[in-house]
Image (tube, rainbow, N blue to C red):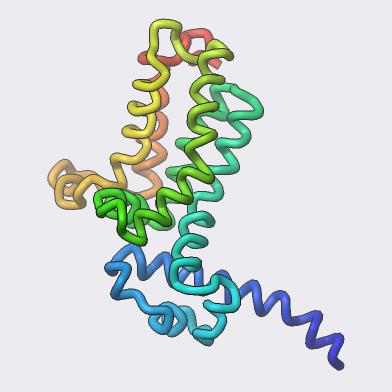
Length: 215
């Protein structure tokens, strides 16, 4: 009997952990950090508040884990890019970002909002820790490899290319909704599919080598 309980526990534990992460993402993207209590997260998730301490230690640990798991798909694609510096893998980072962020469209605004906070703020410290651990090292290597692989035009500045690339990728999500509405833009999957293809054309005629842009 005890073996059956043990066998069933991991699934229940995994479900509770994921529910807490999903609830925290939902709350942190719309509420100030100090207004999101562990009890509120647990209540939203329908999980006992003690499970937050069990899985994450405290609210800071939950916030950090939420950040890490939200950007995990992009991290994996960046790793593929570093391993195989092809144009496809480079463009697939943007494709992956659009695919994941349309599920949580307020997440990029959370990132932008936190980065405007004072450097001593808890949220900013946690976010910078995650970025330094997860994405920053690969971003440096990634654009160096694009140069080494001949994917970028020889007259293109990799640092400026990175700024252009990130701008094209992030802007739709951090643009004020009212501004998008004025221009008749609705942020949905169909629009992002169109925008991705448009951005690929821009990059192909801008800083990607013609031989690669035709692949």
